[in-house]
Image (tube, rainbow, N blue to C red):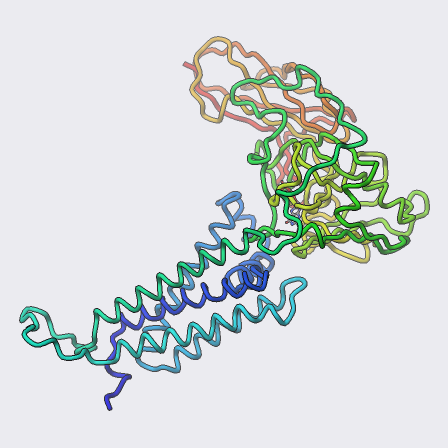
Amino acid sequence: MFDTTRTIGRAPGAIAGLVAAGAALASAEVVGALLSRASAAPLLAVGDAVVDLTPQPVKQFAVDTFGTADKIALFVGMGVILAGAAALLGAGAARRRWIGHVGIAAFAAVGLAAALTRPGSGILDTLPTLTGAAVCGAVLLWLLGVASRPATAPPEGEQTAPEEPAEKQSPGFDRRRFTLLAGAAVAASAGAGTAARLLSSSGAGAGLVREDVTLPRPASAAVPVPIGADLEIDGLASFFTPNEDFYRIDTALSIPRVDASTWSLRVHGLGAREGVYTYADLLARDDLVERDITLACVSNPVGGEYVGNARWVGVPLAALLEEAGVRPPADGGPADQLVSRSDDGMTIGTPVADVMDGRDALIAIGMNGQPLPYDHGFPARMVVPGLYGYVSACKWIVDIELTTFDAFDAYWVPRGWSARGPIKTHSRIDTPRERADVAAGTVTIAGVAWAQNTGIDRVEVRVDDGEWRQATLAEEDTADTWRQWVHEWDAGPGEHRISVRATDRAGRTQTADRAAVAPDGATGHHTIEVVVS
Ligand SMILES: Nc1nc2c(c(=O)[nH]1)N[C@H]1C(S)=C(S)[C@@H](COP(=O)(O)O)O[C@H]1N2
Ligand SMILES: [Mo]
């Protein structure tokens, strides 16, 4: 017998730890995919928990630094931490096996805690992590075993090269065999991980996938977009934002792939008769409407890109509420807040008064002529003109509860955001770009302005400390859509500052005072600098 604890070097130990961790994650992904519970696999579950538990300032920092790549940044960060820990634990386990066992147990505990605290989780959600932990232990012990076994005697005739240094920490350890087996384990993990990804994104076994849906023709079509609503100026956002380019903001690390054949939307709560609607129920309704609505995110900084315009098809939300007998607070209804819940556990609170005041609040099933994309909430989401997304636009919606603002705080409220979030009237310069070099003479300044549910009345542009000059507005589609504007500027050489401000039909002019996005939306004039030569 030889003493295993003294024959393994730190480097093979660290490698064994890394390989074992990779095998653990891959096997957990496979079990998650087989169970159709991809979000229970430890990487996603822990990532989701991190997203939920991250303090607001850190979250804001992440969004400011990484923008919509914040999720990738999170995974990269988690990967680096995990790899470091796995290498350290492997090196430790090479000397003392119990270090490996304790390390695996600690990681498994974190994975289990995260998986079990996800909304709607059950006992099955422990399986990916438990499998991963078992695989991790097995691979680690196996590789350490290989690393501690002395190399078999070289075949006859073969000589050990004299210049090969004697290994101090692992005398005679069969490096070639270890490398081969570790490589094989890595390849197997990569293959399994890829297969798991394909399996969970193919919607295998799902009853009704988005690709099989045909949108019905709405009973009430959108008003035709007037000629001249899209100025088609280079660099200016197009009037409709294509689905592929539409901003995406949510807390979901893996996009829910909801099976529309088993999906349903429940309406219930204070002063409401319970109603349940299947996807087929929604498609078959004779009151489907098609409306153009510009969506905006409360996290959109002044001049930012978290805003987009789409043509939605959906059921009027007020109709569903009326079917449940809901009355708005002004008519004596007991509920002033409507809380929507998503398949992934998001909660979003919306004033009942707003969605019943006659505006086109929708349970949308279509976006720009297609079934809702998975990213944007398939099979159904809410869209309410005039309210920021975090207080209205619940994606992957499954439940609408009537309650009060006193009784319930939705997801973002304890995280420092206002319970009510009407969209602030705003305008943005799209062209020229910040710090652009432009030629002296006539320069086209153009952008968009929005005041959903109210309408844009006026947009003004100012160069340096000059007068505010009225821009030319594009034709208006509806009050719920953004409106393009253009201003021809006779530019002289030098550095210049250009600002824009909008005034809505309620007479509100954008303030110059700068406010941060939290708690209820940024304010200030979008201002850019250009160099004219
Ligand atoms: N389920 C769910 N719905 C959600 C969110 C979310 O995190 N989860 N984010 C909201 C926010 S903050 C915004 S701005 C809009 C963005 O919708 P989009 O991604 O389709 O542009 O979705 C809203 N609906
Ligand atoms: Mo948002």
